[in-house]
Every structure is written in structure tokens, then in C-alpha cells.
Image 1 (tube, helix red, strand yellow):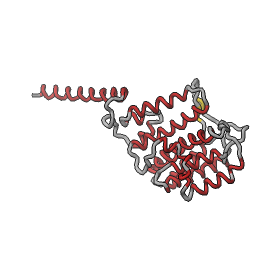
Image 2: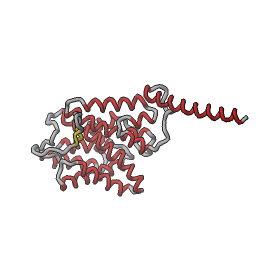
Image 3: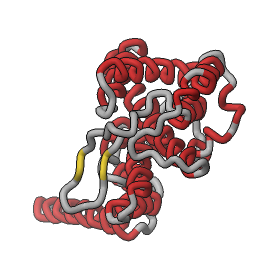
Image 4: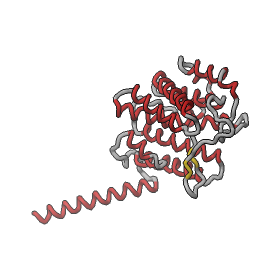
Length: 271
């Protein structure tokens, strides 16, 4: 009787090992993983895991989506184009938010990545009591300053495409992921908005301290927009993109942003 029990336990352990191996094989080849291979982690953890592009999505069972993020962002490492490199950096930021939201985060709007990216081209996204005056100020006051930000294309078509990528990525990371994450940590939306907005300002290393303070203040406004629109980032993306487009805080041409270069890889982190 004891021998049979021991044999049963060994068989059970072997079955568990076999199941674990099968799950990881499924993750790698993308077969039959929808839901069955999902680890029991919080949405915030899934978002953090996607610092490695696509990993959070893969661990949720969305293997093909995860591989698509990994492949698309990895491609930009070797593109040889500053524009494509910038787009890849912003996609990397968005993939963190995407993983967090897909894991069942509460209070997040379910707009697709494409809907968020094209938000600056939909004038309806200006309609809220924060966005409308902010946009008016951007156009009629800051727009007169002109000025081309370091690394930003002057071309009338490519410049909004560029600034839309910037807003798409930064709003996803700072307001889409970090703001709710620190709200949970601090148990205060005001404290989280202040903290993440300071991070937002400091991250813009191409600006001097007074300009970084203004960037941080704009981050507070974008947090407020997110709250007014029930987690929908598109209104903040709209204003963020057009602030950058009209050069509200763009550098003069003789100032270059500081950036982190990854050795031997043509990829730059530029805020």
C-alpha cells in the first residue's frame, strides 16, 4: 500500500513537471496559450515585466501579441534612423501600459493602440475644460515662438507624426501606467499625480530647471485630464502632441537633449 502511494506521488510530481514544460513550450511557440498559461500576477507586475518588450503579454498567454511587440521594438534598435528609433522608444513605453491594461487593470479605457496614436488628429479630443484652454494657449501663445526642438523634424507632415509618437508613448507610461501604480502605492491620487509629474519633468533632461517645472505642471494637468475622462488617455495625448508640435517648450536649435545610448546598438532614449 505504501509502495503504491509513493509511486502515485512520484507520478503526480512528474505530471506537474511535464505540465510546466508544456506551458513554457506553448509560450515559446504560441500554441494553445490563450488564458491557460497565464501566471497569477497583478496588472502592475505584468506592466513592469514588459520593460522587456512583450514579456508581460506572453506571460498572460498572449504570445503572438508579445512576440509582435518584441519584434517591432527590437527592429528599431538596428534601423539606423533617428525617427524610427524614437518611434521604437515610444512603442516600448506603450507596451508597458498595454500589458498592464490587458491584465485586467480597473478603470482603464479600452482604446486600441491605433486609436490612441491617432488621437491628436481627432479634434473632438480637445473637448474638456482642461484641454480646451490648454490647446488655445498652446496655439495662440506658444505657437508664436516657433522654434524647432532638438531632433524634431521641421517637415509639416512628419512633425505631427513625430510628436504624436511622443505623446502616445509618454502618456501611456506616465499617466497610463505610473500614475495608477503610484496611486495604489500612496493611496492618494494627488500624491501620485505630484510624484509622477515630477518624474515626468526630470525625465526631460534637455530642459533647464524652470522649464522642467513647467513640464511637471503640464503633467499634473494631463493627470487631471485622465481623471476627467475616466481613464481615457486620448485627450491628454491630443494636447501633449500639439504642445510639442507648436514648440511650447522646444529647445533652441543649439541645445541638444541628453540621452542614454546603448553601446553598439543604434537606439537612443530621447524625451
